[in-house]
Length: 317
Image (cartoon, rainbow, N blue to C red; front, side, top):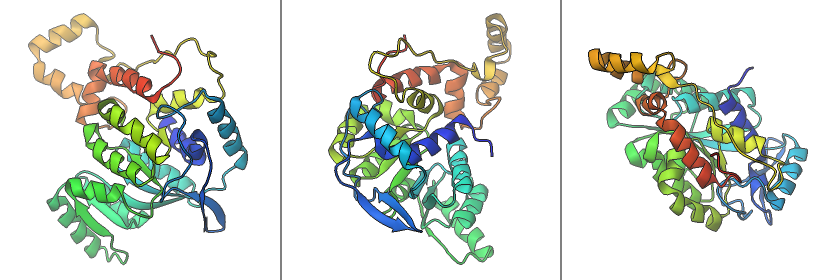
């Protein structure tokens, strides 16, 4: 199966997440014959620096050690934003590695049709949707399908929090858009859950709050967003001062094939066309906010800010 860079990055993070904080004690559980490390009560592994350190002696040693352990792990996931691009690619990994991943909670917006299929397939304990109407529609759909393993169906902000803090999950994948991911991430960290972060706005808006919590609770926060995760993986094993600069490329978004003159003319003569095109990405279904950020290149600015908060070793300018 061919994965996108984001899907590959999440698989990498899942197999080696505990390699990026010094280890003292682990909570070991036996699941399906695997000697797995559980993060449900905190990994107890401490914290090095930043949210995703890559160039310290401790992180280098632990990266190598965890890599040599192979695929002897079991991760229990809470997936926030399961019907979006991040969420569906995460579930591709679950499909490809069913012995290594279990989905305990799913959270989505209002795409009830796709969410229903996900609930039936992965059988989460908690299923959260954005509105009460969507939650009731899901309940009716599942009942009509004769669902025998009915999850706890919740909705709204409280529903997202319930999905993020479910007791059995050790890793929370945050694929929801904007600052909406901030509070669920904070509450999951407080419970000692590892974070696979695909929501850079969470760090940009709340980095000064989140980084001390990462240190306090000794959890691992791994970047799962495409650019950040690609850099994170490329920098494994690179010694301090071994990197001169980082260059981030960009597709250009929805207007990449327009000249400046053409775009200005279109803005003057057909503003509604520009508006519609700005929220339609040529390759990805990411929701209106991120698609617009891509069209205006604002998304690239957020990635630069995210790199700084993640504490990568060298500025990109």
